[in-house]
Image 1 (tube, one colour):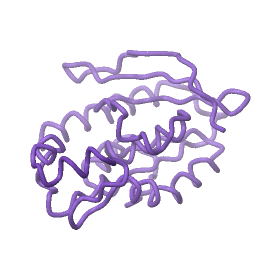
Image 2: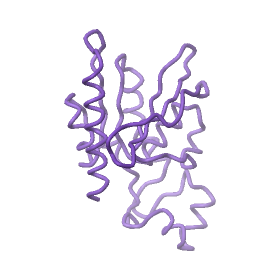
Image 3: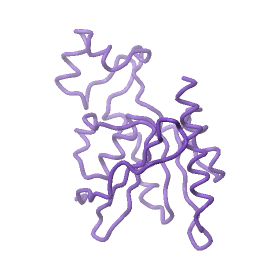
Image 4: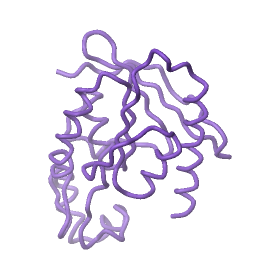
Length: 191
């Protein structure tokens, strides 16, 4: 909706201001990955760095139920039981499952891991849950359980040994600034 796009635009402008204030003369250029949805591309455009749109970062396709929220879908008995039995493998009618989302993210994940410069990923809840689960060391089949905040930047800083330090930055309610809300906290090392 318009409000989400407005908040995304404010978040992007705040990042542009923050990025412009830092000295990047010796830093490698940031690589930006964005979903192909307009609200994601509108979020990264004001940063002023070329970015690559990736359809793999688009939200999970809920098929014929795409107009409904997950809560609405789970209120329907014909979908609640199979979804509750195995939320990771449950495929929405004419759509995708979290398994499908994880598989379609594999090429993007490989490209992210090959980067030597900082990476910014702008995606949607389902794809971000899967990526975050991978980087945080959580079992991928539990990615649907992630409580993933909107309008938040999750910064993962690599540390020796293959693990990460996590910081979270949220857009203020008035949309004027980012505020650190959590971290730094160490994440589990991937095996």
